[in-house]
Image 1 (spheres, rainbow, N blue to C red):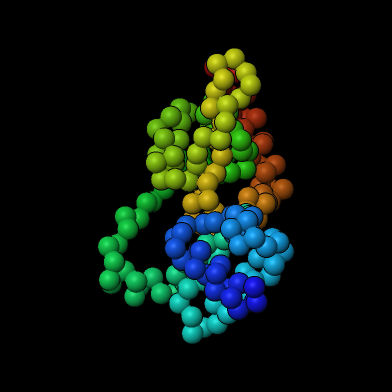
Image 2: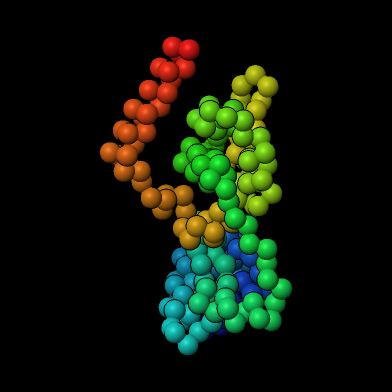
Length: 189
């Protein structure tokens, strides 16, 4: 299969699927090596990167998705139903960041870090598709483990969890000192 036909086949798969597709699955479907699929995807990304194009290919870990460029959102919403925009509360953002940086994590682990019950917040994040159950902990009661989803990666504009920003060490030390102080206050009561 020549490179133009390969690009067209990948484009057709991504368009028809409408959601992310694993690169390995594309290679299997087209019966070619994964490296050739990756090369074709890179060529498509370059072509779509031009300012006269309204779509782009986004990589999400080992998957790719064809989607509209964000700069055309205003034009797009004029002809489609405006999706309900979910706004996250401070509690939801705090919980989501704990899951993102500590995953896989149990609900109890999140509650220990936050210091408050997180049942409803975790349920809301699952409902929004930002976190999901990823297994069970091999411990008494076999509690559920949670991790982030592809929707999380899309929403926060990162390719993978490894691309999340690192915590500033000075701020981290301030957080640790504050937490130790709070623990001491609770012990004194």
